Structure formats: C-alpha cells, structure tokens
Length: 253
Image (cartoon, rainbow, N blue to C red; front, side, top):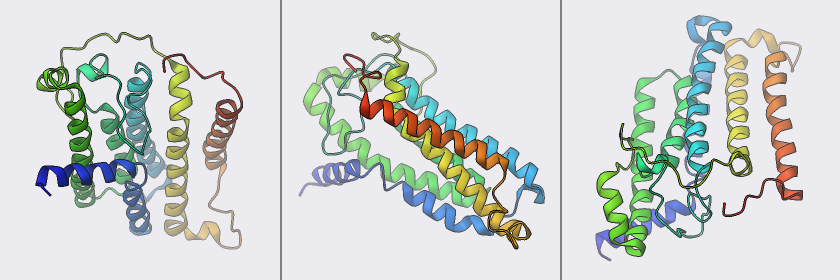
C-alpha cells in the first residue's frame, strides 16, 4: 500500500473514533490529578484557577458553536461512519480556518489539562493532539479534494488548516441558528461540566482529606450542587426536547 493511502486509511479509522480516543487525555489527566496540590495550597485560589481552565474549555465550545450556528446540513457534523460533505464551507469561520471544529476540540481538552499546571504534560498533550488530528485532517482533505477538486484547492490555498488568519472574513450565507447549536452541542456542555466537577472532587478528596473523614459527602459542597445540578437539568431537559419534539429542528441544518 502506498504511504499516502496508508495515511488516508489511518485517518479514516481515527475519524470514526475521534469522539472517544481523546478521552485518553482525560484519563491520564485524572490519574495524575491526585498528585497535584491545590493552587497556592488554598481551595479558594484553586477554584479561581479551575474557573480559568473552565473558561478555556468554554472558549473551545464557543468556537464549535459559532461554527455550527452557520453551517448547513451534511457538513461539520458528528458523523463517524464515513466522510460526508455536500459542499465546501468557505464562509463564516471557514473563511479564516479550514478546521474550526478541531480548534474548538483542542481548547475544550486543553482546559482540563491546564488544571494540572504541568508544562511537560501540556506539551505532550499538544503533541498527541497534533499527531492524532493530523491523520484525521489528512483523510478529510483527501476526501474533499477528490470530491470538489479545484474548488477545494482554491479555498485551501488561501485558508490555513488550524491557526486562523486574522483577516479575510466572509459573511456566512445562512443566518445564525441557536436551535442548531442547542440540538447538536448540548452533550458537549454537559460533558465539560461533568469533567470539571469530577476533577474538582478528586483534587479535594486527595488534597483536603479531612473533609471526608466521618462523612462520605464531605467533599461535596454547595458549589458542586449548583454547578453539576445545572448541567444535569440542562442536559435532561434539552435531550427530552431533542428526542420527543421537533422544536429544535431547522430546515436545511
């Protein structure tokens, strides 16, 4: 098999599992977390740092939402079985960067990694992300080039793959759809909330063990109730709407 075909095959395999394999980053981060002291040895200060990391993850989710809010159906999807594209997105955020959803993914996973406050670990994450998504991007662009030929090449020649350019923004052809975002990205927001809740509980359990002595719920406080409770309520209600109604359906999305 030619090397280019091998890269494409690897990329398509990783493409099908792209929602799960990055979970290894969270698993390794979680395993390392018990050895990470609280920020300045203070839980309140640690919450501030946690809030900053949470903001980084939300920034990534925001990139994904901005992308999905303007994209038509059968593009920028969560499909995993095969590559799907009815057209080459060239407007909106796609006029600045070719793979904005992966930019969003990078930031979403970077948030939990930063909780560890470990530069070598963060660099390993960046390298892992690069090697992993490089194959996926190769497979996607191999497919798009084969299907759209010169139209794709003309767009790719002027649009960077991952680091957005600062100028040349083209207004999207479709209106912004909050419903489309809510329908497609509600699991992502809930996932972020779950991850940060677990990370905080694990860190408190190992760094403030006296809270759990004689009370197995000692590490759970009002912050967790409000933060996690909002996430659960949001997820359950949105999922009910998505699964039982057509309220969030948008024609052409």
